[in-house]
Amino acid sequence: MRLPFVRLGFSYVLLVLASCVTAPPQQQTITLEWSSTDRFVVLVQSTFDLKEGGERRPDWNKTARLRALGHLKVRAAESGFTLIVTDPSVDEIDSLYGSCLGVDPISYAWQSHACADVVREHYRADYALFLSAEISYGTPVLGTPSSSLSLIDLRNGKMVWSNKNGDGDWRDDRSAQTAMQNLLAGSPLRKSALPLRMPL
Image (tube, rainbow, N blue to C red):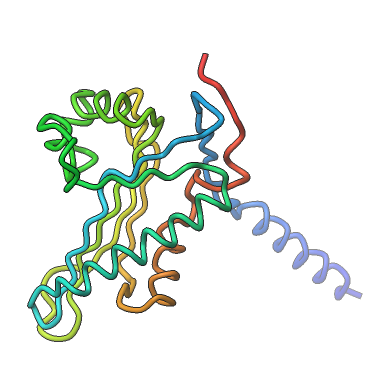
């Protein structure tokens, strides 16, 4: 006769335990604001430092950059923003703007608007992307491998989103596509996150 009470007590314990489990936090949704329907995003930095056995491979770096740009352009077409790729070798870029290329997105130059203002004026863009990868393949492995992608609001120089991944192989197209998808995970630069919201 005590069996139903035992079951009831056991069920009560399970109910209490379930109520104590905290639901995983939801990822914060970032809403981007655009000044025009073109949704200009300028890729300010796209640097690769890929090494083989500790030796830098310029051929890998050049090809990896082209692969990354290709996958970013696909994302731009799918998501509805216009990707502008900078070319530091273009002669018409003056010394002031040129000094802003390759600068880390969290540097004082961006936070103080010294670079954000000049880049926004030059490209009429609302946001800037920074892409970098530093990976050593083979042995010896020097340093910690990492690829990072950051998004800066050019109206205030603040970083609105960033992602860093320790894994990734940029040496072939399929692996590079996977590496880029991993970097873009959670990015506000996706179709569902790109409503045309004009700043007040």
